[in-house]
Image (tube, rainbow, N blue to C red; front, top):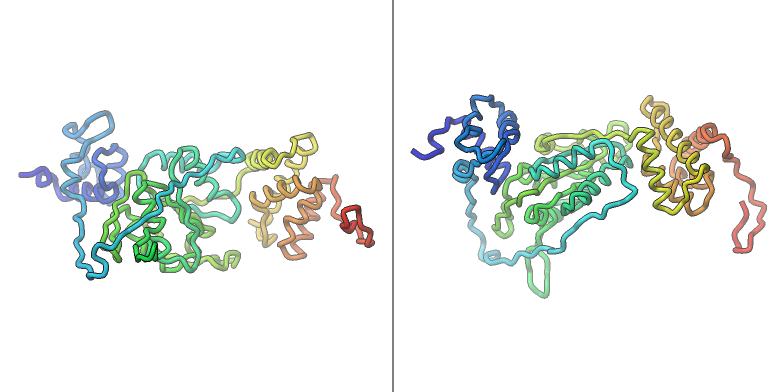
Length: 390
């Protein structure tokens, strides 16, 4: 009788799931075994044999090589047309690493994201939140601090299997299969960021199996690509995959429920607190070479207070627009060029409709009593640079 036959069916099912979720992994922590078992609806009696002293190699870690190897999914053999037999596959060998940005401030879910990446576990994560609150930046900086390879794919309504998995390309007069960013991330054990995933159509359903951490069959070549340890998928979106009811994100689509279900957790990121946002704005003043004087510090406080009031009004349905953290950073950058509070704010909120813009300007003038938004008439006089005085 082999080792598999000594285990009851429920324990075998847990071991099969471990083999599926963590291909090529043989050692497992207690928490991983229990979490996997619970996700299948099992109880202690079903997983206790997997955490017995027989398999313990050190405290809290068990060597299940003899079990999971026997239960790993079998390689699929596919009959291919003669035209693709021996087809060459290529991949961009360049490694992608994000740089550490000194302006970044760790807050919100950042520590959780770091723990997920440090676990080296396949743990698909879906992060939603309003535009400009730092979702993508957070993932990028977590990868930068951990020195993890980071591959970002910008999703749009035209994104399809060819963009993600790869397709045929003409290279030096020969047709070859060029592997896409998803296969590259799998083979490198990299972090794959699917940015703005709620802009996609059902063309991204090709990622279903990949979101289960399983090997993928490249249909056009017959090659099977297995995920290397450390590979993970993180998606960002402005919505939770149910579309945008208020019409703010008109390109956001309703994502298939089966696709969403494959993400282990979802994180709903809000805007940072006033204290955190003040640090972010201060860091951006430093980034753009603006000295932090008493005047600049006062400006920083006024900006974050102004944005906070607008957001509270937005959540109470008092206004239709919001000032994001990204918008505040744009104001800082503009201020570094013109050294004029009024002009910096005016230029950076000009994209809003006239009524909203005027309301925001009026509110800022109340928050910052030292600034005036009265625009003088242009009398046609020009300065020495040939610019009209306004």
